[in-house]
Image 1 (cartoon, rainbow, N blue to C red):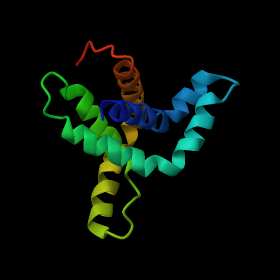
Image 2 (image 1 turned 90 degrees about the horizontal axis):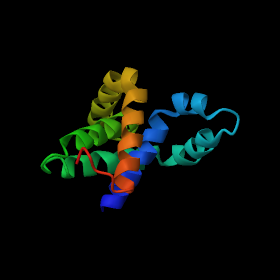
Image 3 (image 1 turned 180 degrees about the vertical axis):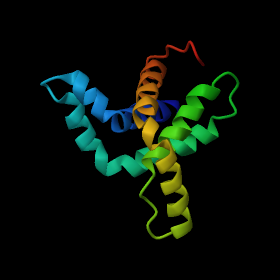
Image 4 (image 1 turned 45 degrees about the horizontal axis):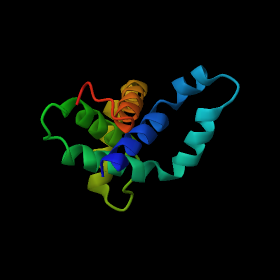
Length: 124
């Protein structure tokens, strides 16, 4: 389950910070291709990041990574839940509040996901 969590952080980081990553990438467009492949699954990735972020929130000394996962999940889940108006309103408001910080949350999530995937845990 930890690997799924780290992969959700990496994927949500790419989806949230695609504008900046695309500028850094140059002419190869690697991140744009990855983001295009991940866009149909943005709600699933956001849901996994949100649920596992809440699940792991109470681990000792890992609160920063889990808060970033919850924020990334909330930012990705904006515009979903069209059949449930109350959930749609909540996630749209949360995504609207987090919208100016999408790139920052995405870059932090990408870095923390990569560090966690390679078991480099200086924060947790």
